[in-house]
Image 1: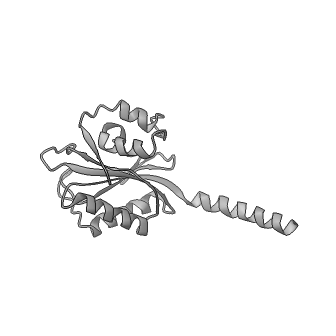
Image 2 (image 1 turned 180 degrees about the horizontal axis):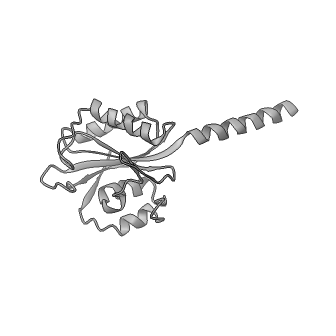
Image 3 (image 1 turned 30 degrees about the horizontal axis):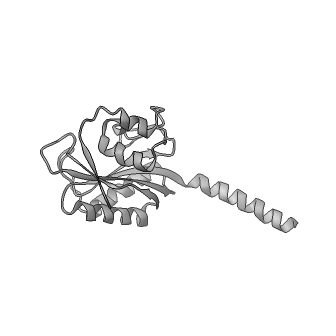
Length: 182
C-alpha cells in the first residue's frame, strides 16, 4: 500500500507541475478574403498542430467589417486552447501561421486572408509595445464578444472584472452579426 500511496503522491506532484506549464488562452480568428470558412478551418488545424490543443471552438459569425468598412464581410470565430508557450512566443507562432496562410499586412483593418488575435491568456495583464493582453478592444467588438460568449459566457475579463456575456450585452458596438452553422 505504501508503494501505491507514493506513486499517487508522485503523480499529483507531476500533474501540478505540468498544469503550471499549460496556459489557458482564448483566440479570435477572422477572414474576409477567399473561402473564409475553409481558411478558418485550415487555421484551426495549424493552430492545433503548431500552437496547442484546441479545447473549445465557437460557431462562425458573419459580420460587417469593423474600422475600415468598405470591404467584404468577415467571418469570425473564437477558440479556447491549452498551450505550453509563453505570450511572446505564442504571438510569434500565430504570426507565423498567418504568414504561412498568405497574410500580407498592407493596410490597418484592411481585408485579410487570416487574422489571429490573442484575446486572453490565463489571467495575465500585459502591456508592451508588441503585445497587449487582454486584447484592448474585446469590449468594443461584438464580432469578438459573440463567439467568445458562446464558448465562455461567464469568463471574467481580468482587468474589467466583468463577464464576457455582460460585456456582450453592454458593448457600444452596433454592428450586427449572424451566427453561421459550422
